[in-house]
Structure formats: structure tokens, C-alpha cells
Amino acid sequence: MAKTANKADFGKGIRALLANPQKLEQAVQENAQEVVRELTHSVAMLPVEQIEANPFQPRTEFDQTALDELTDSIRVHGLIQPVTVRRLHDKAYQLISGERRFRASQMAGLSEIPAYVRLADDQQMLEMALIENIQRQDLNAIEVAISYQRLKEECSLTDELLSERVGKQRSTITNYLRLLRLPVDIQHAVKDGKLSMGHARALAGVKDVAFQLSLLRQIIQDELSVRAVETLIERHQEDRSNKKNKVDKRLPEHIRNIQDQFRSFFGAKVDLKRDDKGKGHIVIKFDNDSELNRLIDLIEVEQ
Image (cartoon, rainbow, N blue to C red; front, side, top):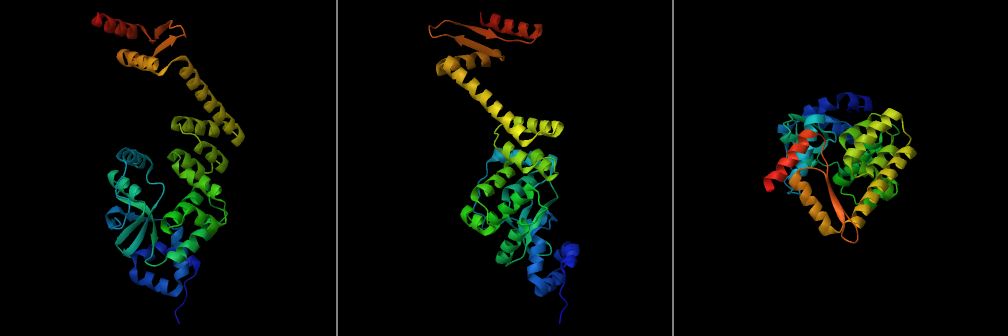
């Protein structure tokens, strides 16, 4: 009777097993459930050249601008969220999810990328293992979010089914998944314990990336509470809303278009003010004498 490998053995040797077909097959025969469980939270670094695209990938069109932005981010930070592949043999893997991340990694020139490895027929066991993984107490919010995303992608679960499987409200799951759309720097801060789930959730509600990153620095530097961050966000949104309303009230659309034309012509900040009677003035702003001379030259050329 074959000896059953224990969890410690799998934990220490999972990468060795992936590279050794005979040992992996033996481990699967002896304790398939334990192998799958270990694979769900073990990340392997796989050569890009050994990963092939999924021929059944339903998505074939990708926004090129978004893909270029992801490529630039990966060049700087590396690939944060691993792709998921199916093991064909010891030197060949087939992509299951993460096509966009995989393409961007290729464009970034990476030679290897992090990946979760699945076996050929481990669907049911994978789902159970991922759900079990979510229940762990030591996961940070980003790791939980990635687990939810994997359940949706790899187990083809709708939001409703996912909610039933993990025993969480759909709104809770949605809040976690929104974290994966945060800038990489913020995700890193969550993973490193510098930001709480509450902080990250508040930042996820901000559309302005520059303001998100500014808040990140302020939170870490001043050790702001979640409530303090929410207050800053509310003030920021109110200020933007008030400015927009003031502009809309003061200038009709056709006048704003004229203001934009002045700004384009002068290459400078131009404020056009006009009252209800049609009276007003135009202010062209400049920073120094050199800039003033440039504006004068533009006006003289047009005379």
C-alpha cells in the first residue's frame, strides 16, 4: 500500500512535483484533494514560452490603450495578479484565465510570470479548495479579492452562485472585487498591511487616480483613520461638484466652447467671464515675462 503524502510534504515539494510528471501523478493518485488544495494557493513562476493561449478563449478583442497601460505597469511593478493555467505536461501549460495579463506580460518582455496551476479535471475540488482558502484568517483583502475573482472565472460562477457558495452577501463580494481595479501602488499597500480594507474600500470609490495616490501617501504619512479619509473624499467630491455647477451656471455651452478655443490658441489658461446681460471680460494668465512675450508675439502675428 502506497504511503500517503502529508500536507507538509506537498507544501515543500509542490514546485518539484510540477516539474516531475511521475511524482505528480503518484501524488495525485495518493491524495488528489490535497494536491489540488495546495495548488490553489501556491504560485509557480512559469516561463512565458511554455504557456499557450486557450483556443476556446471567448474574448478575442482587447482595448489597445488599456493593454498598453497594463504593459507599462507590469514593466515597472511586475505582474501582481497571477494568471491561471492548466498543466499539459512538465513543460507545457494552457491558459485558463488572465489572457489580458498574459498578453501584457509578453509585450512587457517578461521571461516568466506567476501562475496558479490546475490539473486536468479538478473543477469540483478546486472550488472547494478556493472556498476553504477564503475562510483562512491570515488573508489580506487583496488575496480574498483574488480568490473571489478566481472562483468567478475558473468555476464559472455568477455573482449569485458565488454569494451562495461562500455565504457572503453579494455587496460584500462586489466591494472586494472592486479592490482589484485599484492602482498597483494601493494594492501593494493593502498587501503590505499599510492600508486596511476600510481604507481601500473608500479609495475604490474615487475615480481620480491622481487623488487616490495622493490620499494613499497622506494616509500612510499621517496615519489617517477610515472616517478621516471618507471625509476628505466627500470634500473633494463636493468641491468638484461645486466648481462644475458654477461653471455650468456662469457659462452656456457655446460660450465654454469659445473659452476652449482661446485656451487652445494661446496655449495658456484663459478665463472667460460673462453675465446675463452679455457683459464680461477675458483673462489670459501667464507665469513670467517670457510667457507674456510669447503671448504678445501670437497677437502681433495675427494683426
